[in-house]
Length: 95
Length: 95
Ligand code: FES
Ligand code: FES
Image 1 (tube, each protein chain N blue to C red):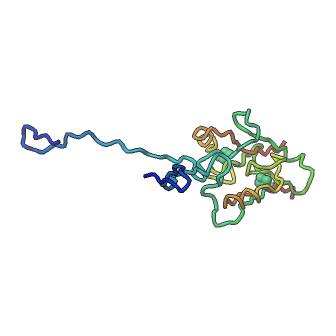
Image 2 (tube, each protein chain N blue to C red):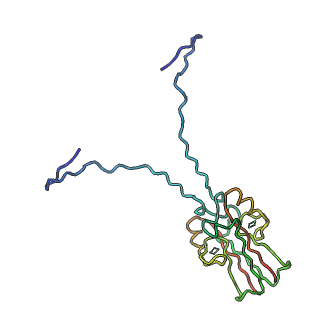
């Protein structure tokens, strides 16, 4: 339907169409990075007394997916493969 | 349209409808967790020779957002506030 106004101009009477929008918020690096570990804690902090390390080399998790967190159990490899990420552990060496 | 087969059963002849699907892949914890650090490396691994630690307490980053990675510079707090996450550093203590 069209409406001719007093000045003779043709004016569209249809209201503007609403356009549905899908917003994907969680791009890489914007989402939370710890899905499951100790979620009742406000901030997950762990301490290592380095003089008490028993092995020459101990790997600590930085991917938040280890089944033995705070230690690394190798699960970072699965995460990297699934997402294209490149995270790995912190290695503590006694010498 | 319907088709009656030889045994008298009624069989729907219409092909199954295709349903458009929107898949949102990046839920919290499914996306990559390292947005920027050393992305040319396949896996970012760091080593600390613990006998060489100079301070009684050193914080190592596990949020992948520190400006002094692999050390923690406190940026985890900003990440946690922005996303509702609860990540924090690994503290290395000399005694
Ligand atoms: S399992 Fe998390 S860094 Fe290895
Ligand atoms: S800045 Fe990353 S854990 Fe503190």
